[in-house]
Image (cartoon, rainbow, N blue to C red; front, side, top):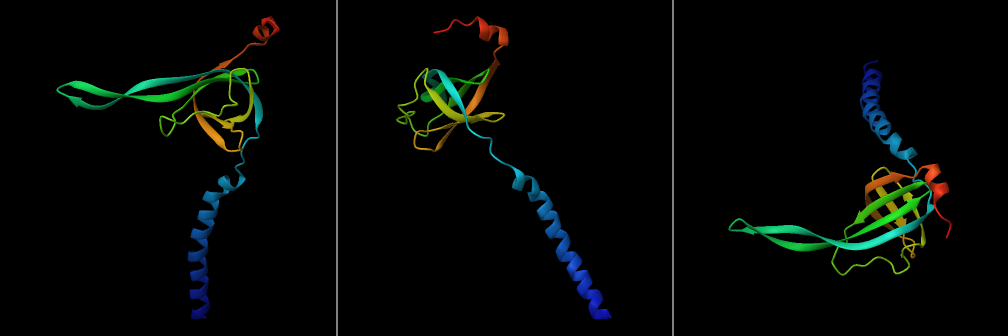
Amino acid sequence: MFYTEDLLMLRRTALLPLIFLLSLMAPYLYAAQKPYSTGKFLDIQQKTRDKVDLYLVNTPVTTAVPYFEISIEFGNTDYVAEYTPRHSAEQLPEAWRSGESVKGRVDKHHVYLQRPDGSELTFIITKRTVADKETIKEKPQQ
């Protein structure tokens, strides 16, 4: 009788942490990526911003850090997003030009654009603008 009570207690103590860990992982098991949709580039610009490296006698010594700013349209929403390359010589794919279409998906704070080779490039959304249906009707057809 003593032997079965110990086994029962051992099962409970081993089973409770396992159930707890599985309950924490459950939301991640059901998470799925949003499907890709087709968007259109409105504008692509390469810009720089100054980064302070150090101060010499209360004078900042800065370095120009390049970044890309894109305007892209998905459905009736226009997004302005930024991408900071890993090094200054990195460029966006040649196929990405203003007016061209691209496959991508939008999260709350990021735009994921599919490169021509199939990999993704992550942009951080800085601004989003929803176009009114009346504004869309008034746009001249080109």
